[in-house]
Image (cartoon, rainbow, N blue to C red; front, side, top):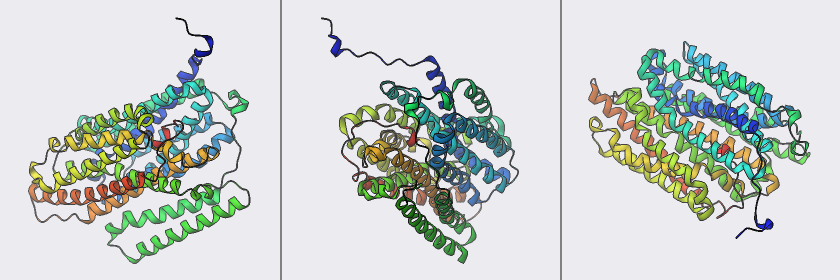
Length: 498
C-alpha cells in the first residue's frame, strides 16, 4: 500500500559542503576537548621535568577551564557581529600557537600562561561550532549533525588519557609531555587551511538567520573574570603557601567582585542594555538550581582523573600509559551511555539524568571505598574497573541531555542566553573542582618516611580524601537534579555540555 502524499516526508537536502564544513568544525572541537583530559596523565611528568609546584598542576587544568568558560559568551557575541567563520579561524590559530608554546615552556609560569591562552582560544572558537551548524543545516538535519558532534565529544574526552599515556610511554618523561601538547599542531594546521575553503563567510549566511548584533558587556566580563580569579587563586595557592592572610583577603575580594558583577548586570538590564548574564534568567528558581547543578556536577566529574593520575604515577609508581589505561572502563561507559542518552531522555524524561548522576555517585563512592579498604601496594586497575565503568555510563547518560533540561526551565526566547550561562558554569565548575580537589589532595599529603610503601600509603590516603570530596559533589548534584523539569519539549544541541 502506497503512502499518501500527506503522510510522506521529504528528507532534508544538505549540501556536500555542509558536511565537509562539519568535519572541519568538529576537528577544532576534538582538539579543545581532547586537551581537557589528555593533560591529566602528563601532570606527574610535568612535575618531574619542570620541578613544578603542586599549585602549578592545579593551574594547568583550572586555568584552562576557567579561561575557556570566560571566553564563551563574548566569543559568541563577536561571532554574531563579525561572522563565525573568522572567529573560529582566529580562535583555532591562537589555540594551535598556544599548544606550541605549552610544549616549549621552560618553567611553571610559561606553561601556566600558555595554558590560559590556550583555554581562551578554545572558548573563542567552540561557540562557532554550534552557531554554524544552526546556520548551515536545516532543522530536520540538525539532529544528525548534533548526534555526530555528541559522539566526537565522547570520543575526544575518552581518548585523552590513553593518547597521552601512549605518547609519554613512547617518548619518555622529559619530552613526552611536550608532545602531548604538540599533537594539536598537525590537526590545527590542517583545520585552519580547510576553514578558509570550506566554512561559509558571513555573507553566505541566510539573512533570516542573522543573529542580533548586541554589544558586549565588557565591564561585566571584567568584573566576573576578576571575581572568579580572585576566588580561584587562594583555593589553588592557599595550601601551598600555608594559608597566609592575603588568601583570605583575596577570597573576600572575590565575593565582593561577584556581588558588584550582579549589581552591574541588573543595572545594564534596567537600561535595556545587553548584560553578559541576563539577571531575569534567575527569576526562574529551577534555572538557578540547574546552573548550580552544572557547576557542582562538573566539579565532581572533571576531578576524578586528576586524582587517579597523580596517585597512579607519583604514588604507586606506574607509567603514564598504565595511568591512561585505568580510564578505559570510564571511557567505554561514557560512549555507551551517551549513545543511548537521547533515546532514553525521550522515553524517561528527567529520570535519565537521575539515573546518570546516581551511577556517577555510586561509582565515586565505590572508588572511595576501594581506596579506603585496599592495601596501597595491592591496588590495581582491576579494583577500579567496575566502579569506573558504572561512573562512565552515568556520565554518558547525563552529559549529552543535561543542557536541554536546564534550558527548558526558561522561556524559549531566553534559550540562547541560558545555554551560554550553563556552558560557562560547566567550565567554572571544572576549574573550581580541580582547585578544591588539588587543595585537599596536596593539603593532606604527608609522607611518613622513605621507601615505596610510605609513598604509596601517603598518596593513597590523600587520593581517598580527594575522592570523598568528589563523591560529596556528586551527591549534591544528585539532589539538584530534581530541580529540573520532568520533560523537555525538544532536544537542544549537546555541544554546550562538552
